[in-house]
Length: 288
Image 1: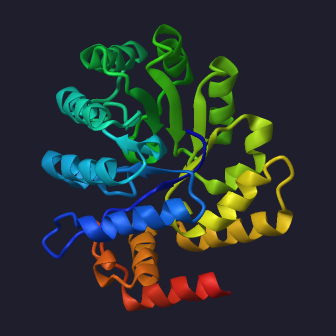
Image 2: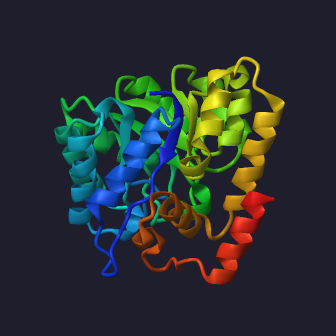
């Protein structure tokens, strides 16, 4: 998997139950409008706010309807047992790649402890062919996965640990990973990194705002050997307009505006839907 990957949101109803049809409609739209792949049940998908059974339903909908070769799915939780169960389910459904957060509750955690945790996940999966991507998001987890931990696991289990999504915003960290593990697929979380993807060896990006900026992203990725400066500037402008503390509600609002499905404005607590003032500010920024 490489290129422009959208971390897709999850549609819900007023009771907080995931909604199949609007979710799949948006997934199909994203794949038809510039995205090379989708990350199901990542942070943008509010994965950690859903019960396990809801997560299994959502991953089933995508696997049964969409091109599985273009999908990855978030299965990480602080619980090793739950992570194993979700990743096994993903493998049974045909997912080729699972995105796995580190065990972030107990801190401090040693490098050896992290290696043991990921090794236990690998061993529990047995002969299941699903590959694992590390998911580094220290702003949420309070835990940055050390580069040497990633390198050690990639060396020991090269067919299992094959990539990483880095949401730290630190491109130097991404370059350090590639310096130690050049075979890993490294995906920064901002599509603005696509401008230097070829120079730095990035496999693409996995981004929330790509749900909105996908066509601009596709242009940059296609022409990554010599990206157009004007396109890159517009891409950066739109991402800046959307990103921030209301990122997920803003993404869902904009997906709802495109699709005409009002329930997209609904979010799970502790998120709050955008208010009218916030909507007006977002619209003004995007149309400036």
